[in-house]
Length: 522
Image: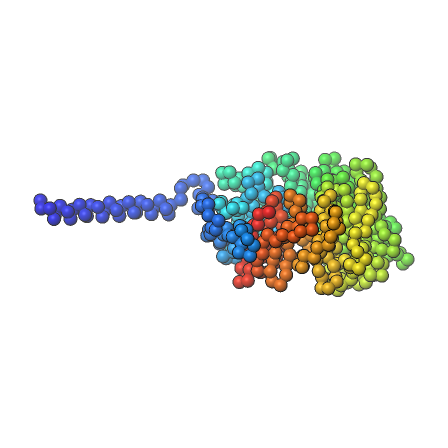
């Protein structure tokens, strides 16, 4: 056989071998392993690079780890919507929504009439789809209710059918092995879940469904009826579950049983704390340690009527006084100011103080003329006093200067470090941070802060974290003893933010109107 002919044969064999290897390689790349969890395996994206700037395309998400050009050497993580839109749930997240290793959930429309639940790691190294709500329920606006994490498991509720019944299924999703498990089914004619308390250490959750409270056992899925005979919508009686989940405080407005109540979860007993008569009571609030319960009261005027400042579902927290019950010392007392009505109040982080505002009676009567549907007019009426009440000494101290008029949503006290945050209505609604310990210095941030976000202001390692907007820019600051440091800035339209563990979750629209969720380490 000639050399040329032999060379052609070897060449043909070599080409056949290369084509075969290539085909096998392509088949491996495009075929998912046949496992029980193949859907999650296909959806998962792992980023194993160590670069500071990384972009990962994932279904209808674009995930980026970037360096912020506006603030030196600041690295952050961002999720951008490629299709559909994010759901505005960031404000309602608490620390329980971040897993031990920093995973957090995102609820999002995928652009194809499905609502999807994603789980994303803070550094974008792991991203996958946990579950989805089918179009039958998604098109009607039903979302996931996120209960929280216990270990590696995320617990949540999903609107769906169980046979012919409709309601909410309770699921756990384990990020360790990407397994989903149905725990229980709550049959509901009205697909509504109100306020709830997730108690991972006790292995249970307490939930309000129309007209009643139920208790869910996470391990067994058992559902226990706690209390019935309540209003169908929790906005009508403002129930508040205590931090330890042992009690539920609420006000009832029915004439025959009007008053402030506490329900004992363990013993399933309802106790009347304060019955309506010459006074009416509303809007309870627990201290962070559960020792105190505070609620507002109004007294009948000369016409025998109660004067409320009406909100959308009930009265605004503006009243003749605040009743405080100390369960540890088994005593109660009132906070009231002569010639004034008291306004919005908050406990500080260690439950030693309350902060509240005061408004002259004449100005309060002006407030009574307006409602939640005329907020600009209400915001123009000044509260002239900002007070700190020492719960142990039963003393109040005024902290604002006389020439500073407080806005409708007044202030927040954070801890024994004595940071005070409040709004003014002078010179175009400036927002101020007041640091009282030592210097007594007032810092003008130059930014306008969103009133509803006050309770998300937190102290992280001694730093006050605040977020604000100014001329189309969003900034995040750390404030410590009178000094302010900017840690993040971007252009866009602010939506929501929250602080979870040691990072901030920011929800906004950029200049191209793309929805983004940004994770900023603190």
